[in-house]
Image 1 (cartoon, one colour):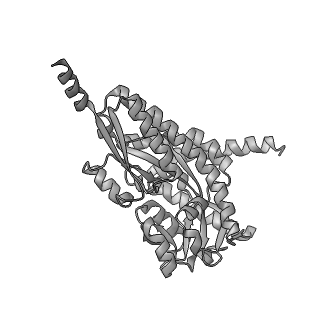
Image 2 (cartoon, helix red, strand yellow):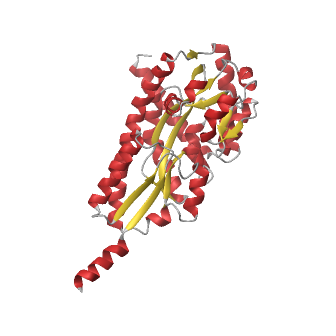
Image 3 (tube, one colour):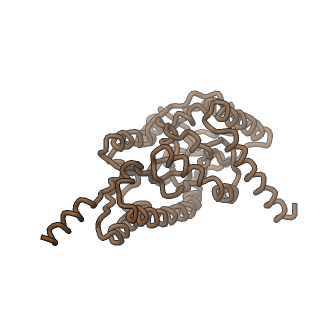
Length: 330
């Protein structure tokens, strides 16, 4: 009888977290997430199982979020823009042409990642750190060097990222919203001819086979999170929640670090494929930065980004530049 009661107790406390992702099976992401899931199962003595649905089999981010709301899934790996409907200020890194180097981003992330994590938690999602995706660049079939060039292009933007859609309109263009799964075929068909993505994203998703030029100025900083519905997560025993948090935070940190290496390699892949990297003249750059400043200001005035948070990021950015200037003897 005691063994039977113990079995019932163990069964009742067991939990399965079903997580969807567009990452393909066999990818570095899936390898490290599955390794983390195995460690969670081991340390919780199988009280918690994490089951992944890779390769977009559960649909795009919008579809996954709908399934999370009805309890069919407990979470997913999402690009930042997909969660902006719940916490708009998670787009603090999506101010166009805000950053110039990954070293600058690394410095700022030390201070600002916690703001994003806390904001998403308050919005009902438990996340285990920020997974950097590198810089997005403007990639196109024909060269883009001026704002006027961009206005002549058919520019793609993710269909679930309304904040970025509004932001990019400041440049005087009407973007073509499409799910990520439709981008490659749309490039092939000519429905779009210009995209904004990271070198790694372009290679992994095979979009680089359809573009010829990259404007070599960072557009925005990309990141993703693995987010679990907080209500479902809190049903798990506190000790087991601690194990999940510790193990998956470490696993996703490994992905964050590896992403940086893979993105650098992807740049070389693009160049080896004959893709041309162009740099606008100083006059044209000034125009890009001027309009980008307007976009950031509109993100503040519309309430998407709290002014005090932008001021905080700007202060850290200034501190980095001052520190870097001193280090270089400037």
